[in-house]
Amino acid sequence: MMAKMHDISLKIGPAAFRIASTWQRPLDQLTDLYKAYPAPTGETVDFTVRLEPEKPWRRFIRPSVHIGGDFWLPDAAPLPLDQGLLAAEMGMNLQMALGWRRHLLLHASSVEKDGKALVMTGLSGSGKSTLSAMLAERGWRFMGDEFALLSLDSGEIMPFPRLISLKNRAIDAMQDIASENRFGPEMKATPKGDIRHLVPPPDAIERMNEPATPALLLFPRFGHAPELRPMGQAEIFVRLTQASTNYVALGEAGFRALTRFVDDVPVKAMDYQSIDQAEELIDALWSPLP
Amino acid sequence: MTQKYRAAAKDDLIWHDLDSMTLLYHRPSGITHMLADPAPAILEVMNEAVLSTVEIAERLSARFDLESNIDTENIVLARLEELSRLGLVAPVPA
Image (cartoon, rainbow over all chains, first blue to last red; front, side):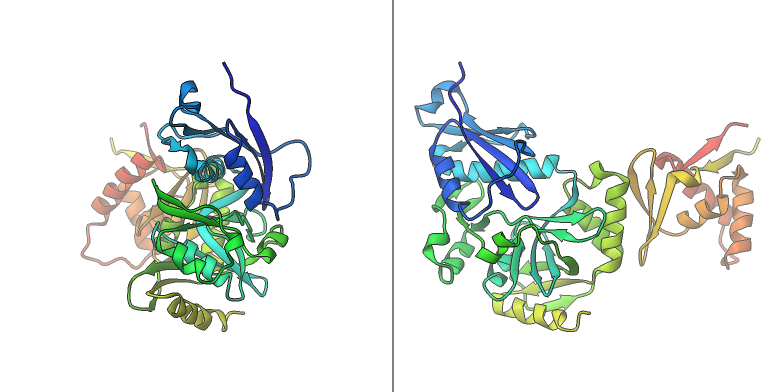
């Protein structure tokens, strides 16, 4: 027996999603948080994400959300219903990571100034997402906190400015500077820690179809004395292939896009302990750029 | 009978130099290889010819300024065995 599904469509940068859910509430939260985004044009979407009960009877008793879609991982654990918004966001990320083929996808945040993009990549906990959110409140255009989409033809970075996913300490830090009406509900003790979503600044959404030329790549590392270090090209290349979810799938086009990126874009490893330190280091690198 | 080898076809390979390594994209497999010296030089001098380790060592000596006291043939043989496992070189039956 199939329960009736509710659904909404969302357009984020170049990707259109249909989110279908057994429950209305996660969709209401998404509709509210994405209300400034343009509706997808045309009939088709790139991906469908489904939020369904783990078992039919669990729709009513301690409901638990199973994430499904065009692409999925068998070990994606179900989440409690009050984390349905997180499930939807995770589902959208999963579809992009596993299914997107029009760009080389890098697990990286990016911000833009003067038509040029600063790309930041690193492991979870490096602070790349928080840095992009903070810089977006300090004169940079936010392009994305999760995926940087590298064009296979032009070498430009395409924005993917979905909701900013704030974790743990970053929630307090952003609550101090961003207005309350930009925040989604706080979700405590999720599999990713405490999570609260933040709507990107208006210019990030208005200009979400405007690419930028990558001008600087940073590997930030939070919690160490401020320092910039050079990195060798071989290490950079390997770490970017690890940061890409579709490098292998794109074959020769991915190889050509990534080698061009490594050839053209200056790179530094950046240690920092505060956003002010990071901003100072970034400004020093940014101002001499052509 | 001396074992001979042939490198992957030129059209199947895309070369890209990084600062300390050489990337080699192998079209038929879709695999990106990251090679350290002297593997790229060995593939370069083989140039689609069918060659023995002695002949490859000779070509390397002619092209590059090799140290005189190293056992070039054995180094070439060890690298050829590695490159064979990667599918970038194939032993040619006599």
